[in-house]
Amino acid sequence: MTRLNPITTPRHQLRAEKAARNKEAALNAFIGKKAQIDEMLARLASLSDDHFNAHPDEINWGHVGTLEHYANLLKRITDSAFSEGEHAE
Image (cartoon, rainbow, N blue to C red; front, side, top):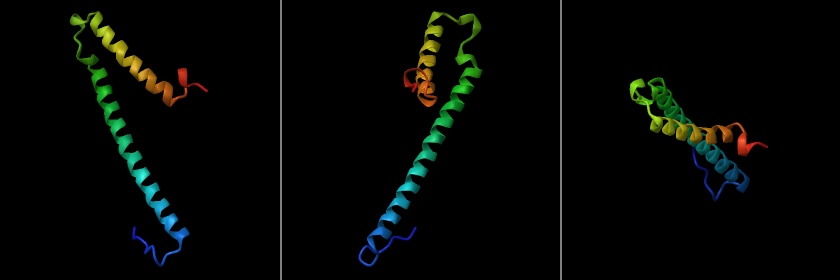
C-alpha cells in the first residue's frame, strides 16, 4: 500500500489509510495466532491418539492426575470459547 503525503492529503483520507493499514495488520495477526492454535491442537490430538505416551501396563494415579490437569486447562478454554461455565451469559 502506497503511503500518502501528509502535507498534501486531506486528514480524512489519511485517517482512512491508517485505519486500512491497522485492519490489515489485525487480520495478519489473527491468522498468525489461529495457525499457532491449529498447530497446538494437532499436537494434542496426536498425543491423545498415542494415549499421552502412556503404556497400559504402566498407568497409575499420577497419569490420571496429569490428564485431569490437562482436562481442567482445556475446560477453561472451551468454557471461554463457547460462553459456558463461569463465562456463561
